[in-house]
Length: 139
Image 1 (cartoon, rainbow, N blue to C red):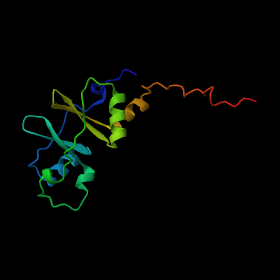
Image 2: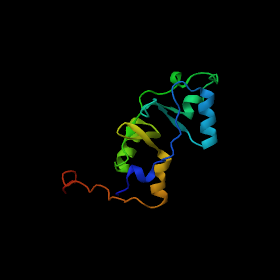
Image 3: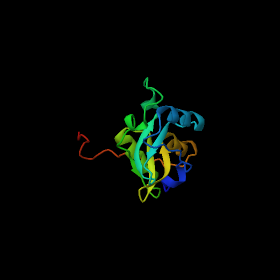
Image 4: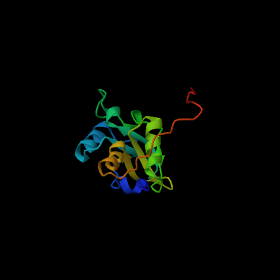
């Protein structure tokens, strides 16, 4: 499989900043029909991420994003193969990664984006492991 992160990522990134409110983030997610927003520093680098799950709690709309965002944001460059992104998401148990180029946010990739590969049959099935000769019993 030679599909790159850049082939699947969303390029029109909607982001928030730390000082934006929970109400603002909820509205952006609703309007753009997305489930996560990167939190960008003024220089365009990723400071964190906020997901719809983070906003699901009974939070007041005026609460700043900085109080609910996840600071440990997982990033991946656009030139990586998508299997790197899939492994990162699985190992870290996240559904979204921020795509960065030289630390600047250039896209977002979700687990739903990865499902496009299955839907479009753009993956290769690999054969399962063959039985080991050591494990076979002799009669």
